Amino acid sequence: MSGFMTDDARHLLGLRASTATFEATDARGEDAQRCMNEYFAELDERFDGGFDPGDAHETDPPAFMPPGGLLLLVLNDGHAIGCGALQRIDDGTAEVKRMWIDPRWRGVGLGRRLLDTLESHARRRGYRRCVLATNATLIEAMAMYDSAGYLQTLRYN
Image (cartoon, rainbow, N blue to C red):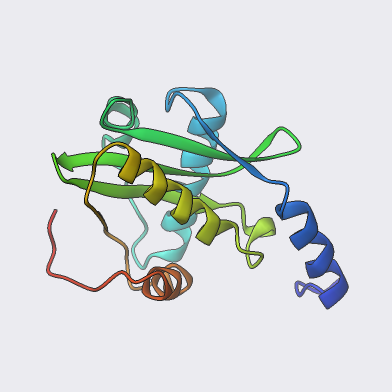
């Protein structure tokens, strides 16, 4: 069995992905925690030397709560297949955090739709800019952020 998707299979997945919704949720909820755990596990697998989320399980949920923060789940047929969050940095700046799409759903535009949705929520909350931190190992994410107009800067965190 091949790990590559045929064009027909990718087309069908893209059609299903077009029905995905983005729902604000409590970062302490079961689906949110599962998605973030899968995100951390993927980082641990991909990064040289692994990844330690530190105290993120305790500090993330309050930071992702309104009015300053937000956690969105990406849902398809009622199942969480991704997540992304906003965290307040200051009155004018939000940080995009914990963006993750289930690997089986990648390549059909869900990551970009999630980023666009997070940016829209940030604007509605009065933020004038979004920042994010990522690792050069995540080349797919770097390419998406670059195509969305994000510029590399000095570390802000």
